View 1: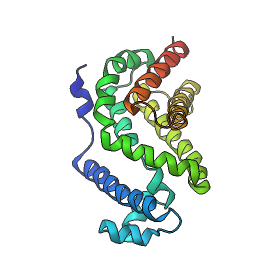
View 2: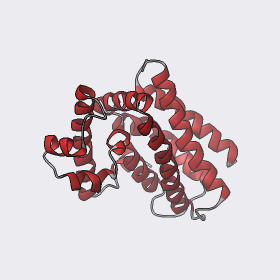
View 3: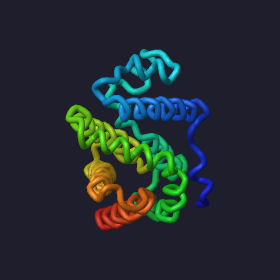
View 4: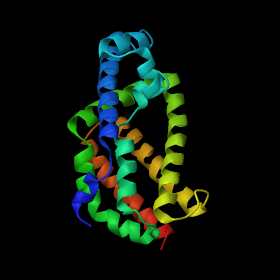
Length: 210
């Protein structure tokens, strides 16, 4: 499978949604950094971003998600489904297909803008209790989303123990990597942190599904 696999999935509507959410998030993070998270309302973010408050709630659900939204999550889910090639595959086969795609995928989705926003987002996670609390809930939601996607591409049930294990490893190890990066004062590039941690995830999954 070639690197063109990573370009397959998102529809025009999905790309535009990601672009809109990323633009709104940039506006929100700038306002939060300048005026303080609690001092800035959703209505103020909406006015600055040129959208309605209802649009923000439709896209993000809560104010906390203006911080926690990560545009790489839906992109990664789409790539995962694309790797399956529209047919159920065994875990070992998926891992074999996925390994050579890791470097180009990371290079494509972890842009300089994404890295900078992630730094800012993690600072708010560390300092705003309600954002930190919502982060834990968001990780569980992502675990469920990845569990469903893994079930689709492997043809297994979404309550399959190995499917659940794989989803949990992917989400929580990546979260540990972000916490580590923040704990170093954001030393090094986010791309390099993810490259190292994804390799660890692949090794763990290969050990589980051998």
